[in-house]
Amino acid sequence: APTAPPANRRVLGPVEVDLDAREVVVDGTRVPTTRIEFELLAAIVEHPHQVRTREQLRRRAWGEDWLADDHAVDVHLSNLRRKLAAAGARDVIATVRGVGYRVNQDLR
Image (cartoon, rainbow, N blue to C red):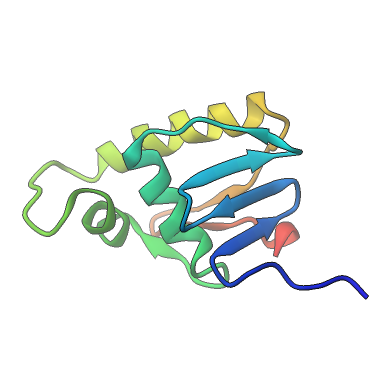
């Protein structure tokens, strides 16, 4: 029987996110991410059944005192999605219009 991934790693289809090593791997190939991109992805994959609001994601990536608007979240997630798609992992992150982001339901 297959063993479950360690608690510090999330597997979503072809994507593996190692929360301790701060690494993202798609089909065995490491995908380089910025600190902000990784924080956003980690916040989403740590709670795969919940929608993470832009405010929650902004606080996770930049901290409580950051005053930039939530559009920065969209820009960084767009860059992250582009990197994941280039590595062969499309549609990992789903947008919930007017609310935020979550893991694509087909990958949970």
